[in-house]
Image (cartoon, rainbow over all chains, first blue to last red; front, side, top):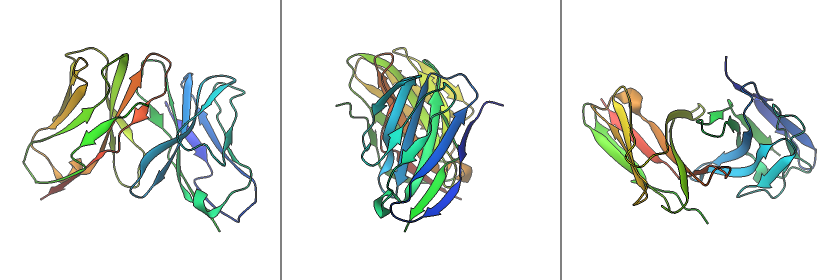
Length: 111
Length: 112
């Protein structure tokens, strides 16, 4: 089954404690992205990747890092989380001409 | 800067009504237009991907059209049902290889 998986699905952490949200896709897609969704603000892109070792900033990259060492994985790293990073995060992947597949979402609370 | 605009922002209709939304985008260097359906507490799901001027796509009671020369796409829902209640997102790619840019969405509420 074609899918994008994210882990963890829910996370409560404290300010400053580094965390990683993993994302994996099994469709051999070139493009992968991370979004955050906040009430009233829709989907905002954090980072995206066009292929292995190729990443670029989205609209709200501050406070986040990503890496794309393998085609299937695209982890999101918060080196020093802050309360304003409390949000719902979606990972997504697509091929060059295909629609985008979204993961189930990760709900993060930073205290 | 690529701006993808959607209207209206929200829409309340009665069951059985037909409705439509608009997505506007820059017409230069157009590559593809996507429509997604996003239900509360779920992930967005793809409805259509369209690339050619004049494209029309249909999925059950939902259809979409594309005009790349004037930079707009319409999404139509015929005979709305309560289960159609969701946020409908459009997204655009300008030039192959560029990122997918989303509009803010149209929130549809269908009352029974």
